[in-house]
Length: 123
Image 1: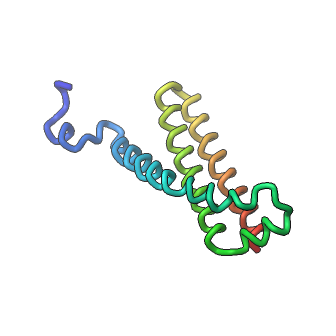
Image 2: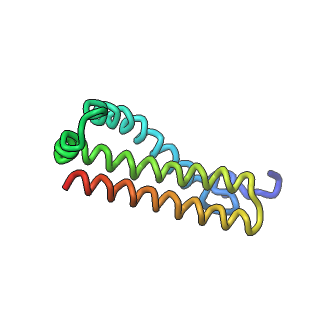
């Protein structure tokens, strides 16, 4: 810590210049998920065990579809950021880069798949 200037100590950014932004994104997505997950459970719960037509009719309404879409997007964004932090802590070198690219691709693919399935149900 003796080599840090007063400005770097005050801003808290460190050498990569992204730590604070990453931390802030994780905190915001955590709060959003704390609100969205119970909403998702209460909107999805009534159609558990119902037939396909009832599920399609339920998700054809805007509120359940929007809550499900927001939960998918925010959940996989939170997963992407958390997995990236974990990989940065424990992997090194080229493996770190490959794992981060893989996690980002996986999270966006799962997000797109979930949204596609939701759109197919809602429309």
